[in-house]
Image (spheres, rainbow, N blue to C red):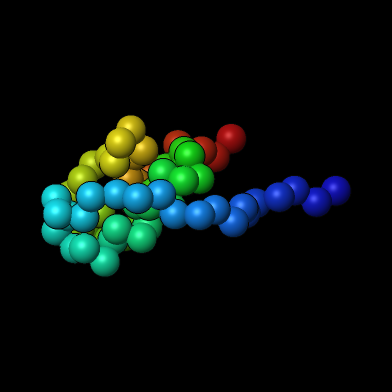
Length: 69
């Protein structure tokens, strides 16, 4: 049995002015468009956000703890 683990989405439009690293805008736009449960990254600029529009930004270890069952 196979399980879909990815989906192609068209990035949402976001405001980049508030970001420490404007290059992170693409990650955030895709997370919004995909209605992601979390953004998993080791990027300190993303971690500084804590969450983005209700989507938590997690380091990989926290993601494994939160979603592993």
